[in-house]
Length: 351
Ligand SMILES: Cc1cc2nc3c(=O)[nH]c(=O)nc-3n(C[C@H](O)[C@H](O)[C@H](O)COP(=O)(O)OP(=O)(O)OC[C@H]3O[C@@H](n4cnc5c(N)ncnc54)[C@H](O)[C@@H]3O)c2cc1C
Image (cartoon, rainbow, N blue to C red; front, side, top):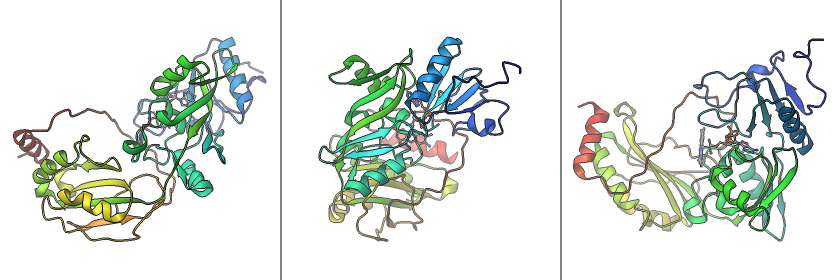
């Protein structure tokens, strides 16, 4: 048989090549707006040995390697043309060490099942991202910010140790007392750079009352809302229990919204939100339960203008469709003057 057609015996796990009916699904990341990638093999690993075998085989044959967990890389960094994608998504176990409050999480676990398991087993959580389908590996190794990060830190801040397969196919561990430099570098700079992580150990936090809120205003109030929001949301002064997001959408959307998450009692949240609620004709009304206990993605509920709604989490994750998108980030270090807000308003409206 043509050597190129036969999958090598030394590659273990579920190995998908271009002749497989699974190939097109297996070679896609979440962002379908990326140019297509055509890996030689996509290896779905079921245990650490599968990862070791894939690394050793790729090294022996001089093929480039990409690690993949939740497939949510913005730019397709978990894909490669002609190389080997080592997919750890089947290494997705979540285990809580009772007593120590530590969670050992497989590098292929997605965020929503992690939050669910930690809540179910111990009313615990970690500060992860807000998107339920992001993978723990890419998130943690790149830092990881989410809706309780102002209170508990980045995801990598609560990382205690990790286990990875290195370039030789050996299993190594890193923590503050073992391979310290590797551990330091993995907390923000680790995505695909130093080895293939197979599991993480995290410190966890008890969690109780959590509320997700949405405030909406009529679209013409955008300038007033922006002015009030940027003063209110100044991180120097804003209560660390809240993480808010101002959503500026087009005029056609018809409304301006602030969504956010708050850790604490409902009364405190109302008190905290007052400056925003009073910014422009925002008449709050409560819907749903008074507290929620669990994190997942933020999704604004249906709310009429000037109303505040509460969401019960977790909302069921129904398997999101893949999307086309381009994302970027910028940081604001000073308040926008009124003239800048007027300019932004003009640009969004086209007037
Ligand atoms: C819809 C969406 C919502 C998001 N929301 C948030 C958010 O709320 N907060 C936030 O902080 N970020 C968020 N992100 C960004 C996200 O955290 C990063 O894109 C992250 O890298 C995705 O990780 P992944 O494992 O899902 O992706 P993948 O595409 O699988 O991997 C991303 C990177 O990590 C590397 N990698 C994957 N697995 C391993 C491994 N086992 N060992 C070593 N390297 C590995 C890959 O090689 C690649 O470089 C979001 C992204 C999307 C698309």
